[in-house]
Image 1 (cartoon, helix red, strand yellow):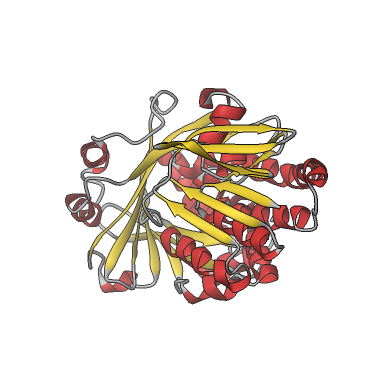
Image 2 (cartoon, rainbow, N blue to C red):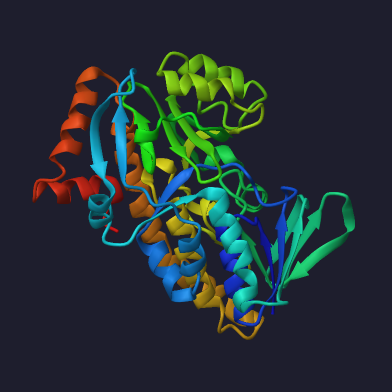
Length: 393
């Protein structure tokens, strides 16, 4: 059995690994020239962490995790306004939690391919899809520059992100499924140190209105930055543009001295995109299945994108691993979607709820957020905070 996986992000890498470990031959196609360097610090917990333990990926992730002590909200002068202890956050999240830089997570998943799928997965970086076909006889993928040599297989996995080419060609235009949440986000790293010593091992978030900057000191001596802000044009402009650096400097200038220093060092090319979800009525078509952000992006507001990517990819491997003939592919895909879609939809609902408070619109909303964080230590209230932060997982 042979699978073609489009997209070597976290979902695609884990899906390729699990299929390869089950005896499938896998062609993994990625348009980027190599593992992507851009990304932000994120919390990894819930179903993805459980799946990572089950499939043997957890040790590699734990090896590159950061030891975060707290999340500190600071005002324009760098003074703490409220703080969330990370041990408490881990408890609210249901136990274990890892803090990971997205590029580190992707590289760990890449390195883990040889753990169980040695020789079964072939990766082609810098290979851009031009056309895909999927019918009852199989799948074919044509790459730009190689129109006369299409890849053929029994299964196609579209794991190529929120702006999926596979989805656009087989399921319809992006604007039919993309649901912007009225914000944009950017992520990049800059040379440090730009944060003072009192914020070592702590996430620093600006306690601001309609925009937020999150900063963290990395073990490399750099600072990772995540910037989010309201943008009424988000529905019309989904992809980052060449003026991202100038736009970010205009949006965030004066937020704090630390943010101003980060903006001065902002690279010309950064991750910059709309904060959005993908809402699809169905994820499968003939022998094609969409996975990860391509099928059900939850947005960074839900805090579970990487977790769902790994858990979903592992579950897909569970359903497809035992398949020994082409006749078993479509029933396996149907079973996967039936099992996994409700989980993703619940996470998306949590993300939409979080959107209302992620960037306070007024001083009153900002004060309410401070109160909620401070009250999160109170028994009973902590459970309500947990539902707000992590949903039911």
